[in-house]
Length: 266
Image 1 (tube, rainbow, N blue to C red):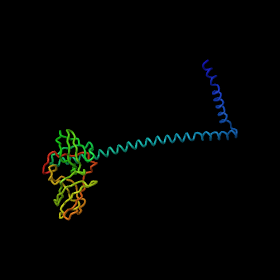
Image 2: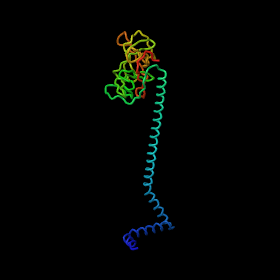
Image 3: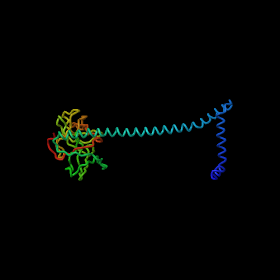
Image 4: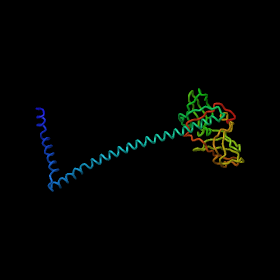
């Protein structure tokens, strides 16, 4: 009891203020005098005015939290959709690979693209197949759509593939149905070019371009692309042929390596 008494004595000012304030509020709310009603209304307006910014701030904080939750849900949904699309593309690619492997007579080995090449002056990829899989240097690399390059280095479990879009890549090709031959090199974008094709040969847009078979690396008849442009060369004896490449070099995830060259590919 003595402790309570001391607490009351020490805080008597606060206790008295609280009592008088509470009594004043009680009288203000229960007095029906017209003047008191006006005063009561003004007091309520004043309290509402003071509380409005607090209410607004709370509302804004609530809206910000809601927006943040919506942004997180939208991001999660976008990632799920992207993941599903990637899985769909990968499944389609694998189905094409299986169908190609079932139909072809080529002795091939599948591999997955695991990285891009790091050499500054070489456009290449790294695949997860190497010497233990029968892969070595100078072997043709392709997808079901066509040639994409050749192996230039092979480790035990990984290999480097020079891409057809590398500026130093060269490929002996044949244009069908004319049978004209030439050396294909990369031009720009998704376009390659064949130079020094005889001018008197009939070549049309849409003609197929395949490997010629003159190389020790590529068997004849592998798809390379289609003719998308025919132009006169600098001399009066040659044509320049632009070729559309079928593979999107940034899209495929799996490739085939031709382990043994044969003349008949299908």
